[in-house]
Length: 143
Image 1 (cartoon, rainbow, N blue to C red):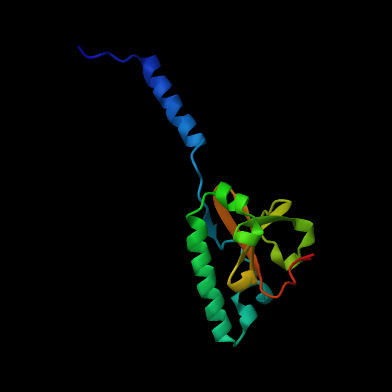
Image 2 (image 1 turned 135 degrees about the horizontal axis):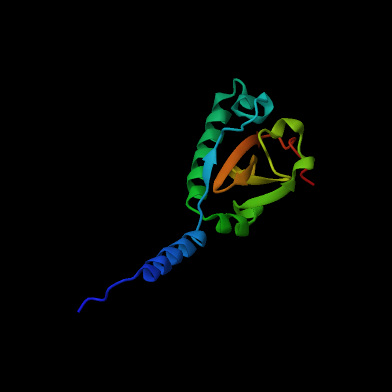
């Protein structure tokens, strides 16, 4: 004989599903919505050097694909020296690196050969909002 479900059984099932969703692993998505207009902090930095711009674009593309397959937790744990993230105070950055409602701490991801490029942004929900790039180590004090 089949068991008849009552309303409290359904309510428990819904709450269990919500709990699973709350603890679900989040993966980053990327947005350029708040990218600065500063030529020094975007692709325009390379000017007529199309070879370097193409190499950087290729490296960024590969990095975004790789990073999007990692959970936020993995990305933070890896640390900045191994293609992870580092947190830097917003006050450490040049003004042209910040757009939108950036929090007090920004995130920096290194990519490219020998990690020579920096992607700067912040996390909001599961989205990494890219606000600027640092191609010449002038966006903040690198210590």
